[in-house]
Each structure stands twice: as C-alpha cells, then as structure tokens.
Image (cartoon, rainbow, N blue to C red; front, side, top):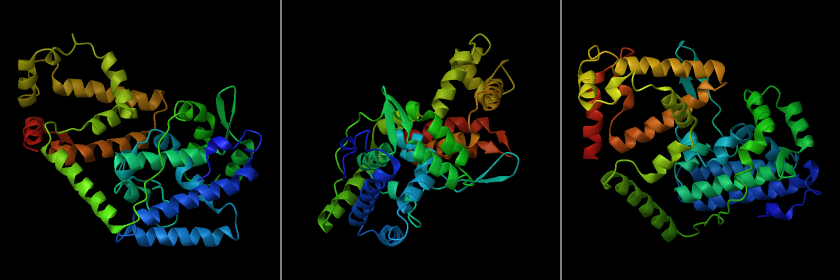
Length: 344
C-alpha cells in the first residue's frame, strides 16, 4: 500500500490522490478476501464487493471515494478512536422513547459486507489495523497548515454537491468542521500491516486464538477485561458520567457514603430519605439537560449504550435491560448482577 507520508502537501489535491485512494482501498478489500477465504458467509460478500467496485471503477473513478464517504466519513471519530464496539453492537433500527423508530446507517465495505460483521471476526490488533488504514486513506484528503488539519476544499465541495441529501450529511459537515480535534492526536500512531493468513493452518490458529480469548473472558479472575475497561474510558457516555459525578453532592445523597443505607435502599427504595431512586432521578435530569444544552447526540449515546450492555451481558451473564419492569426499575435484581458476575 502507498504510504501516506510519501504524498506531499503540494500533490495532495483531490484529483491527484484519487488513484492512491483507489489503490489503498482495493488492497484492503483484497487483504480481507484472503483473510476470510474460509469464512462461509463473509467470503462471498467480500468477493462480490471487490468485483463490483472494480467493475464500477472503469466507468466512475469516484466509486471508492463515494464508498468511503458514504460509509466512513460521518463516523470518522469512532474510527479514529478504534472503537470497534460502536460498530459491532450498532443496530439498524432503534426505538425511541416516543415510540418512533430511528434507522441507523450501518457502515459497509462495499454494497454487501457490513463492517460490524467483519470487526466481529477480528481480534483487537487486526481491528485497530483496519481503522488505521481507513484513517490513512482519509489523510490523503487532508492537508495541514502549521499543524492544523483541514480537508481539501475540492473534496469538501464534492461531498456538499453529491451527498447533500444523505441522511448523515449534517454529521459529515460536523466532521469537516472538527477534523483537527478528531485526528490531530491520532496520526502519529504506528501500527504494522495486516497479517494476511494465506493457508488453512493459519486460519485454524486464528480460530483457536479466538476460542482461547473467549475462554479467558469466561474463566478469568475478573469478569471485565482491560480492553473493555479501556474502551469505556473513551466513550461519550463516560465523559457524560464524569461530568454528572462532579455535580453530585454527597451530603444530598447520604446513601452513597453509608453501605448499610445503600443495601437497605436497594431492597426498600422508598426508605432512608434520598435513596437510589432519587439519585437516578437526579442523573436522568442531568442527562436530559445535556441533550438540550450541550448538543449531545442522543443516537450516538444509544449506540454506545447498546455496545456496553452487549459486552456487559456477554461477560456477566446478566441482561441489564431485565432490571426494567413495565418501564420501572426493579431494585431487587441489582444484587443478582454481582452474584451472576462471580459465577462467570
């Protein structure tokens, strides 16, 4: 693959970098077709996407530009954060509190292959390498001036002219406006190239490594791995939680400082004054305020929450949504969470 660093600022105009982008993305798809050539479902989808893109490139040199713009530009922040869980646990349809259904854009590598399905088959290292390659491709469309990053003007115009009716167009514009903050601390990271498994023995080894990884999660001393905890630190939910925790006055919620009152409040939510339910009401109020005043995107938080709950359920054997009964919290089930976690 062509190294981004070999493309100087003088040559990094939109038309010049298109062949380089095509080369890098085709090489990435080819790499995945090799890596998953023994995968019953993915190999057919990947081969179809690679063939289709090659055919369309002969008539439209912007085919790959259109593909990466439609599927990756709007979520480049999650890609830059190597946040595979954001994609793996993303659902196409999310039901809102008002009963309406919001349809998410699920990124694809082409017209067939869902990114979430590919990432679900990769280990952390390979996922990070994939994200790094996507960022490298976008860096071909980005210039810098005194260490300030900004997208090429011709590419910005191309997106505005051709994607103005895209459901994620507003997110794309936000990326254009904030790309320096999103990427400036990411481009110095160095990750080695994807190791393509070109024989059956290596593929068997990958499957064995994946099984060992699952066994380690199941039998390890802690129900939560370091990857899970480190991933939480980089989420918008974690930042929101940090902001809310700084506003909590312990004097207003003595249940937080007295273990006996905490246990009693779990069993008898209406006793002991400001208990767990009052704390939850306070937190909910702060979250609603964040939506209104801090321009926090509710759908992004919902997608992150689904990813976290999915991992929590896999690692602890407990479905967090089961503590809700008819829209109300069932406090008696909180203790079950910790007992179940200890058995996994």
